[in-house]
Length: 475
Ligand code: ADP
Image (cartoon, rainbow, N blue to C red; front, side):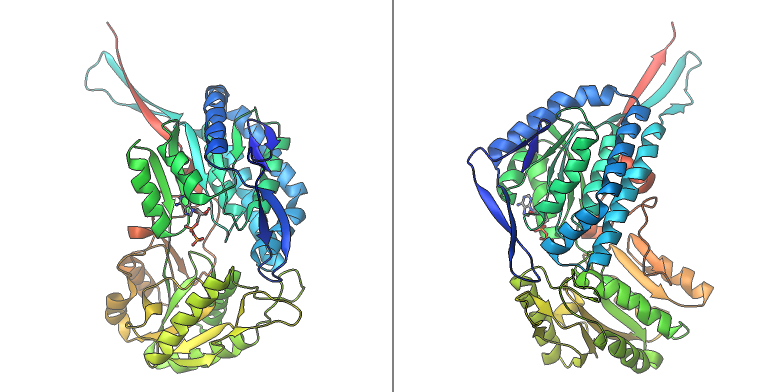
């Protein structure tokens, strides 16, 4: 269903689209498939609702967010199941994602009360200078399938807290969980038109969202390619944009690191969500003296992972999202083998009995080199290539990516080396001996072509605010 002006609707054309389970190949459900017309209606209703929502106090908006959080806590398991069924991640991971999504709502429910302005010292004694922070206007949010719930609230909780109304377009792979989340928004009693949801063809909806002058902000998570397109399309109406785009995270292991802990770090940063996250490890750099030892330990651990349907207890790794994801992963592995990469475990698409999903063996490749595709292109799959380095100067030459700069991880016990490494890394998020750096209260975002702007924490709400400077002259 689409959600426009406080009502659940079918598309005017009556069209629907099937949603498939990537583990079983089954159609789970059909959802309404709207287009430009519904998008225009949604924008108009968000525009109509904007002034009223902006006019509420932060405390009032915070109270709505608290109710949304409460509804999501009640629906947590339902939403998590929908996530697993439509995009494949193991249920425990999906539940963790929904929990994180709720925490964004809880955090911004409080932050709504704390949108402060500034008083600036004047240059004349009869003047008083002030900065007010006001909501930017109607927000269009475009979200991906890999974190289909957390990406919604990470954008829309701060948007609502700031006083913005919105139109959400989720990925076509994962509309069911988006509908469930928006149901939680609806049941919180938000004023009509503050929240809107359109599901349909990405290009057509994206064209209207970017072209329409009533949309003042685009917030997007997805591929760098589509992000660039949205920036270009938004240029004509000079919209504010936030972009969370691709990544190519290095995972660095210094010789003094605890190798077992580092192996666990790779397990979490590489194989969670079957490697389909923008902060997934894409290159592992191990100091040469410990590289063989590390490779063996990692391969042993990776070979023990259970592949299967995320609804099945005991599944560690679910399917890839679709067949073209399988082909991309295969292409990266074949290219690595041709360029002298050595497969330590995995390496092939695989099947799980009774299921016709897109499964792939978790893979470790030793002897990775810069000429390989995997050294530069985002794999978005369960492949861990091991590169080696000799000392921090050698590492510094290799570790930064020419285009991407989202997340990086490194393991060492040496404090000096830790600070030196932080200063060499051109990435927006760094985990030092920490494979899980993402928390709601801290800024998430990348440098270079990994993005513009930050989500989470106090930075996240600023993305939805404009500064209004006022100079008072006393006569
Ligand atoms: P991924 O590779 O993760 O699927 P995409 O960038 O293709 O990343 O998709 C992320 C989101 O962007 C999804 O909601 C998708 O439907 C949407 N999208 C894809 N192409 C366009 C486009 N041309 N205009 C607007 N949204 C788009």
